[in-house]
Length: 278
Image: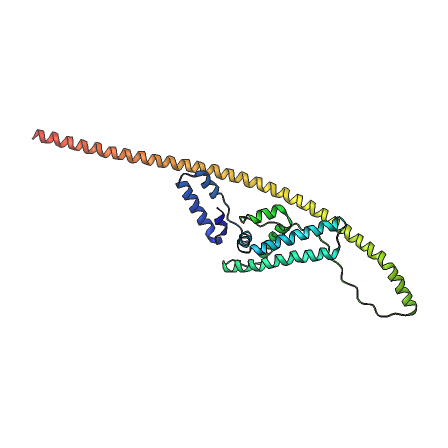
């Protein structure tokens, strides 16, 4: 089944159906039902599956960058990190995603699929999710995604631009500048506190969003499992009906053969009677 998700996208359905038929013909009906229930991936999910198979180094760098970003983010939340290290980690993770996006463009183009901004965005969201979320990473590593994943995000705060260089001042203006310089550390400390509070608030929002997303995902999984069970039962009923039809056809063939033999015996008997009468 893993090989199905590595095929060109337009071959997925016919190859899946052929495999299911082969399994049914060898009386492996449970496996046949499992294969028949597999869903064709979306274009974005297919592209991510191919990246996992063909860009192992890039995927490894993505996971490493995601781990680094999470570590720095947690350090900032705990008051041990700073904005510059957080910005650097965000940039590293972004570059890893962009490198894989370029590879995905090549994969999609070579397979004849549309390079729409929506598809590219969905691939990027899935890669971000795999970098930053353990459950998403496990799904991506399996290389059997059926649908793209949603990226919740870390809620990082980007830094403000550096102030312009001041011109030399003198007299009263110079005294005011000295006063501003003396007050600058306090203002920076206040700004740092505001930034840390913003990071904490966004982190809390991220936790809440992740919890909501996982609740939606759990419900979707339950619906999928119910649908798979229904599909499996329908396949089993169809297989039983097919087997009954096959058995009936065998019985019909036997009955027809017996009828032909009986007819031949009757014809021989009638000819014998006619011969005796003559």
